[in-house]
Length: 168
Image (cartoon, rainbow, N blue to C red; front, side, top):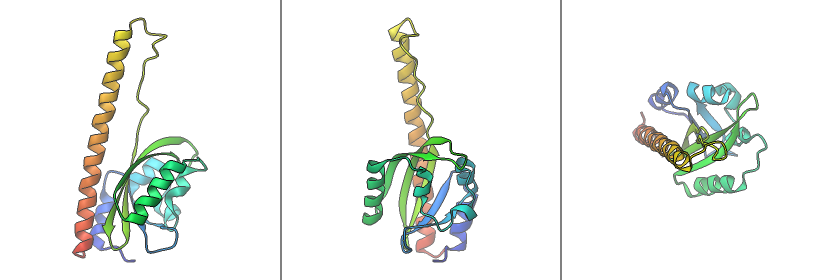
């Protein structure tokens, strides 16, 4: 499958980690990844091209998340799922993955590292009210980051869909 030039340039220039997978090939391999993906995972395009991105799971058992991904691919629908992944150096991270069918058998993946929500241990803190407020603020901040990530991913997916549809 040939990726239209404008689409390729857009994905490669994006500041958020992006991948493109080809459903028309055995095992749905990655056919494109950008430098933000490399910065997140430590893997360059030449190391991931032709591989299914499940290699990032590094042996971490996640049957529910993997089943959700398989179902979304089979049904050709969007998906948002949290995965535990491993960087090239072996360090684990929480990956919020957005997947979008963008046409011509291609799926766009948009990945975001989700930091653990900072929580104050109530056995250390003396005032439960302070602990509750601090945890509520931390959760609100995580929710706002999730909304921003989702909006960014949606915009990228819509742009790629349009270009693929019209040969851009």
